[in-house]
Image (tube, helix red, strand yellow):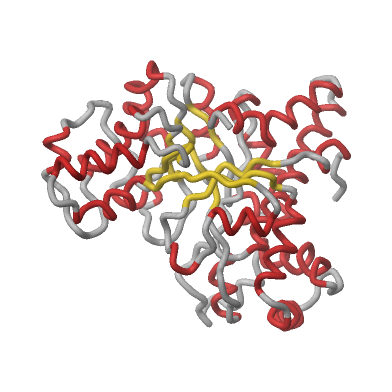
Length: 362
């Protein structure tokens, strides 16, 4: 599958991602990280027998000096013969991502930090603060007033360029358009994971107050979510209520709700979307779903992200399959005389990096 030269040369801003593992992975760990599954089961066979498993063997194997479509056994043997730092540097450098916006609030003990990730890639990184994780971190504050003060200070830290809510995992996306009071929210402070819908809503509003672009996980995720509660259209009351604030809302991943997300990005001035981890999860099918995701969304409101977690291969595949899908989309438009070549170049730049630079004020 060819990539248009101007797409192949694009530098990328990955507006939502995580760190990579500090240690080598066993086969079971590697396969589990390929997908959003809870783990590998003999009932379902190997996860290498999936779209992304075949993509690893096709596209990642040559970067480790293996032939295309090397067997899973040969791939993992070669990978584990190398130092994990070398493996990570190889795939991160090959991705062409020059800026990482890193959510470090999930399993930070096992992953490289944003700064470490950027150092390996010869790139820049910025922090996306995970709201529910931050609230849990601060729950041991001496008083409610101290909790609020520390939370607002973190949201306004110079290192933070955006915030993320995992409401989809905790309560679903049916967030009210009515802002809860601070007193209502603070009644739910506890030392465990933040699951109270009032607190989750209040945290989202606090991020908006701080002027931070606010990301929401949407759709595709692991078994902790109830998928029917992760439809982005459930956010409509919240989006209506926040439309006049001038603060961007970013809908992440979206599959299988990518068309709903595109609609919301079209009708609400502050809403943006991506295809996220679904891009590499779809493997050779990425171009088809990418075209669906772009059916009605304005091209100035669609961004690149990998949502890579744990495996450096996912950064490389996320970027490569994104480039292929974007190239296929633009080549089809050029064949159909839908736009001029200079328009195709501009669309490519917007989606690859310029939209993210504008939204996050990079």
